[in-house]
Image (cartoon, rainbow, N blue to C red; front, side, top):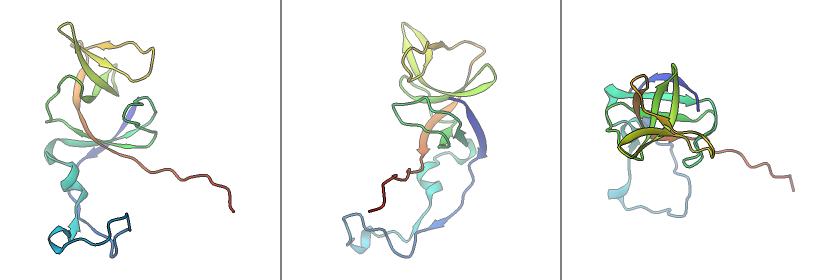
Length: 144
């Protein structure tokens, strides 16, 4: 899946709306109420090392990355077997699972039939995908 870099993380406060949406739990004790929600604080652990990318294709089916989704990439998070990573291969940013097999590292796509890419000196691991911001699609129901 190709990616378009959007830039490095920056802090911004986003206050909660005046009323909360009803989700089945309507009454919260005062000690559990939040006055302000800062999305940056929730998803960015290392502000100096976090970057945003926009997905420009659909290929990672397991975590359902769709066209236009925003990926949050942390360059300080440790790489390990089974993490979703952004790598630079053939001068292109790609999203793949990092897999260790028989003492070697591979970049593995979700799509069936794709060939694992052996991690070579020419392939750079850019960072770990920590979060995916995904727009909820609308339902195409007929009017009643």
